[in-house]
Every structure is written in C-alpha cells, then in structure tokens.
Figure 1 (cartoon, rainbow, N blue to C red):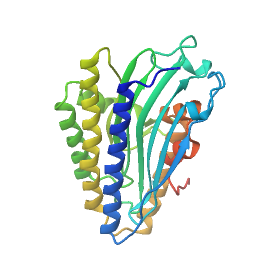
Figure 2: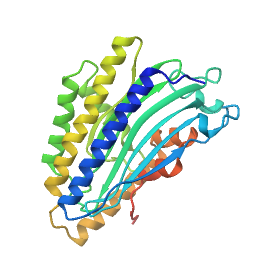
Figure 3: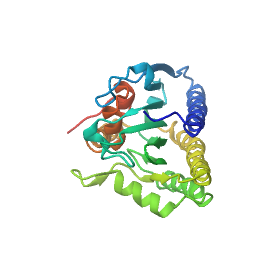
Figure 4: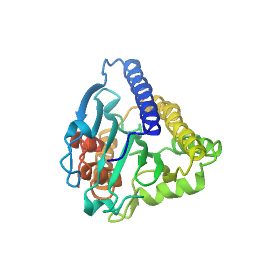
Length: 291
C-alpha cells in the first residue's frame, strides 16, 4: 500500500484550508441575501475495494462532504477526500503510473460543484488533486456552466485563470483552455457542457523542485476560483428571472447530469475506488428536466 507522504499531507492540509475559505465565502453570500443557510459536514470512511487484500475502511482514508442548500446556492457541495489503497486489477491499467502489477495509490483533493437558484447565476465546477502511484502528479481546473451565458462573465472567468496560468511556470492557458473544451464536451448532444475554463492533468513531479512548482500552480488555481466565482455570483444573484428562464436552466441541468454520469472521469474514479457515493454524486443538480 502506498505510504502517506509529507507531500500528500501538505497537499491535503491546503485543500482543507481552501475548502474552509470557500465555504465561508458561500455562507457570506447567503447572509447578504438574507438567508441563514450554512454548510453541513458529513465525515466518511472509505470502503475497501477488490484488489486491496481485505484492508478495512479505517486503513484506507476517507473525507468530508460539505453541503449547503440556500436561497442563492440551491445546492452546492464542497468535498475533501484523502484516500489510499490499491486499484482493482481491471481498473489499475487506466491510471497514470499504475498497473495490475503495481496497483497501489494515494490521492487527496478537493471537489466542488455549485448549482444556483437564479438561472442568471452560472453553475460552476472546480477540482484540484494530487495523486501518487509509481508516479506523482497534480491535476485539476475549473469550468463555468451558465444556463444563460453572459459574455462579460465568461470573459472575466477566463481572464482570471489566464492570469493564474501566466504567473506560474506549469501554467499553459491556451493548452489548458483547449483541454477543458475537449474534455467538457457531450458527444451524443454535440455540445459543450458550459463555456469552459481550464483543465489540466498529469503535471508530474519527478523531483522536489517540480513538486513545489506544480503545487504552487495548483494553489493558484484554487485561489483564483475563490476570487472570481463569488464576484460573478454577486453580479447576477439579484436579477429577476422568468418561468422561461427557469425552464431553460432545468433543461441545461439535464445536459450537465448526462455528462457527469456518462463521461466524467472523476465520477468513475470515485466509484471504482470505494469513494463515498453521496459525495461523488453531489455533482448532480437538485432538479432537472428532459423534454
């Protein structure tokens, strides 16, 4: 079983601090709207999976699921997980640095999805993570998912992440933007899930200097999200909306659910590695329609 390294502990501690800052900001927005909604936190232990030799859940880590249901954030989840163990043999070969012969891994990360009550406010997804197999790497990103897109919001979101990429050596905004456009695409609908953002994976850490650079960039991604998304929420949360606007939001949420259940690698990873089912599926919207 992969050891819990100092790097994993450092990354996990920072992801937890980012979670705390994001949740506090979301709760502050709710208070500005006259709501007392707050996050509820549920701790969980990871179940063992086939291929781990019967290791019990107390030895394989776990995490905390944070959920808020308010007047602005109709449903928002901010999850932290730090787990380790062995991949099932049939799954190990699909993970960077793992194989049926070397299935051990450790992983820590933060995953966030926010579905908004007002259809003028964009939904959003953000995730950053650090994984170790026979290799070690960072991945993550953020993407904006507005039912009713506004060019100003899209431009500000992309500009913020471009600045984060430009300020850090691992950052490559054109590549990570295109990667997000390619990844967050729904082939059977022939459309994108939203207006994009950045997505990166396999920022490998061959030595200490690379780890520090990649960690600093990943921290910048989280800090950029904390800066830009609340700004967009406050910009739109007081706008009036119609029944037709709400219907458009619900139909768009159906597309979002289709992507997450059919194509999203994070959903697959969580379910195949003994993650908490409720935490994994918190990405699904509270309501959606298919017409």
